[in-house]
Amino acid sequence: MRYLFLISCISLLSGCSTENERRDIRNYYFPLRGLTEGLVYEYAAVNNDSLAPEYWYYRSLLPGDSIFLSATYYESDLLPRQQLTQKLTSNGIILKDMYLYETDSTRSDVQLQIPVDVIADDVFPFYVRDSGGIFVYHIKWDLPQEAEASMRMIKNRRFAGDTSIQYKALTYDAIKFEVRELFEYDKEGILQQEYNGEEIYARGIGLVYYRKDISDDFQLEYRLVDRYPMEQLEAKFRSLYGIEDSLDPDMPKSKN
Image (cartoon, rainbow, N blue to C red; front, side, top):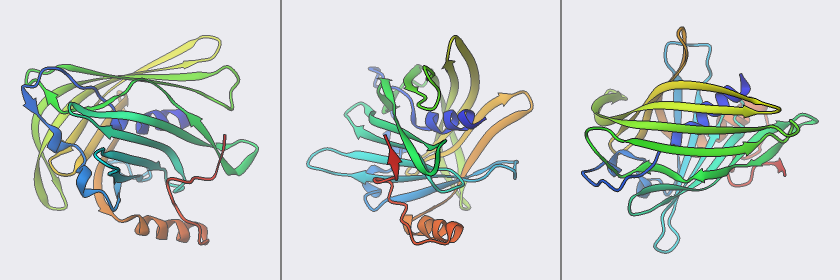
């Protein structure tokens, strides 16, 4: 179940670009120039109070003529579990690097840093066809606490057209993608699992809704409920642990 939730959050920011420039959808991705100070996006589970909120911290970096987006994922314990850097290109957003973090089984106060092998680096397409089009994303990583074990995730997304969505009592123009994911657990044989789902991106905001169909009677379904500065998440961290540490996403306590 631990890796199931990890796969769920890894897959949030994945896609691919296309040569067909019939429609430009870049304004539905995260507002890169509006995130230079950084914002936490808090997502709450839909129709399932037993699932804790998920937090993503997005911050844009503008060195020279380039634009990068740093994204860090936090679970309910408010420790970083995933960190990635994306880069803006003329055709879309590509993945520059990615690291996963998990608690060391021998030391609960240390997180292991796991580098991800990016096989296909496209994250979000700027150009799509109204009739659809399939966008592919592919990553792989080793499991350091399981000898000779690795995981692979391949994600297909199909542009599914326009929609609208409410966020804080306002209605936004949005687009949606139908999602199909395959992930493989490889250790002395390959175990495969497939999931279907959906993602919705709102103009000027970015990802506002995502769903993964785990089984006929269970779904992982989350919706954006708030955006706020990192200081507010740090206050939650201090309250949770009763300490004065920072949640600086660029320097997680880790052991390679």
